[in-house]
Length: 113
Image 1 (tube, rainbow, N blue to C red):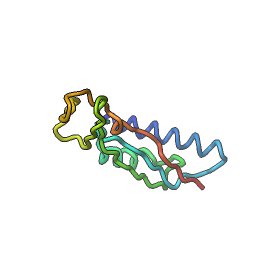
Image 2 (spheres, rainbow, N blue to C red):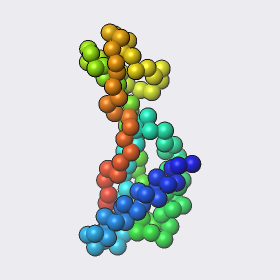
Image 3 (cartoon, helix red, strand yellow):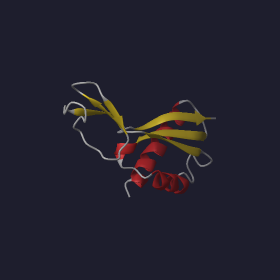
């Protein structure tokens, strides 16, 4: 369950930012998680509920925005979204599709006191 290590790192980053500006608590942590990243949102939420205890994020909420996978054709510019029936070959021209979104794993927003 690699989500636990992800949550630990996110809390550490958030605490570092909060301490840097002299804050004593974190109210909200918002993450962007790409569909192609292979992260289970439920596991993130569970890990956050457990690991936030005793940290500056003890009373914080976690919001997770799931970013849909998007493939763009290198040749003709056609775009496809969603992870279902995943192929990196363009159905229009047979060209190579590039992954443009869906790999994100980032701390998007932090609300502190």
